[in-house]
Length: 344
Ligand code: AP5
Ligand code: MG
Image 1 (cartoon, rainbow, N blue to C red):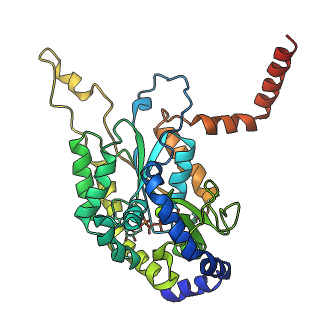
Image 2 (cartoon, helix red, strand yellow):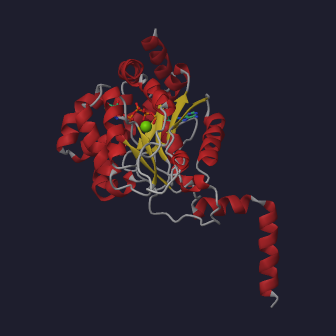
Image 3 (cartoon, protein in one colour):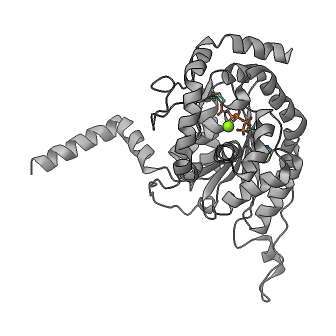
């Protein structure tokens, strides 16, 4: 039944097939050429862009770091929504799927081990994935970050948890994107990617400005091997999600409810009642499911969760400027300032 639905979805995407035939070969070789120069920089999307500095308030939540898992089925929009957050806020995102695709392109040892597994829609061994992730995560101290695609098994969840706890940088937020299967299936056949940056396009939802090419670099877009052929491989990935990955939601729900014990360290003159208060606010994991079928539905809810729980997150100057330009009153104020300067 599932395979039949996917097959139907794939039949309707004739535009994609035409593009695929003409562009795939040249696209893969072009992206492979570009990858060695751009891969490591683009893995931390926008990490070097400036951020807007606003007045810090006395709210202790301002000091809270975003260490977030973007959780959800394959095709739920994890990469798309992480990309939006990174573009707007001072956040770095790390996608294990993107990292593996880089390794595969660069023919590293990890890439050679992962290639066949990824192409078949299976899961790469846990220890190897932990190595892939921690080698990057350990450079992100004092940064707000999002992990997309990791963990994917209970073992990975436990390994990540103990790694982060050892570093005293526990997770602070898990967001589960809850999107119905039939919506996802129709999206996948329309998905095109820019491999070296991880940018994701969809022919109907967020098409590139020029069909078949990346908006920022002008390089050709490609299909992901595990979206091709859409039917069998994607069904396998979805199946794997239900059997192996979705139990992690209970794991995190449980962690978020765990009691936070008071700190065992205290000053010798401190009254026992003062033990109830930590010098720093305790790290409490928040788990949030956001349901929806379109990004217009999911994006505002996701942004509201982040703004409420992490009010210290800074917007990048670029996006703050764009927003300002969209404000009519600001535009009028700017015009009157310009007029008064030029009349002096
Ligand atoms: P990975 O790359 O992580 O794949 P995935 O989880 O299957 O997720 P996707 O990237 O397919 O989907 P997404 O949720 O990012 O959706 P997207 O934003 O693209 O992993 C690939 C493989 O690597 C795995 O199968 C596995 O083999 C291996 N691997 C990775 N991590 C591993 C781990 N931890 N352990 C073991 N193995 C691991 O959106 C999908 C499409 O929908 C796009 O076309 C997009 O434009 C469109 N879209 C998004 N939002 C909307 C919307 N609201 N409305 C309409 N269209 C939308
Ligand atoms: Mg993705």
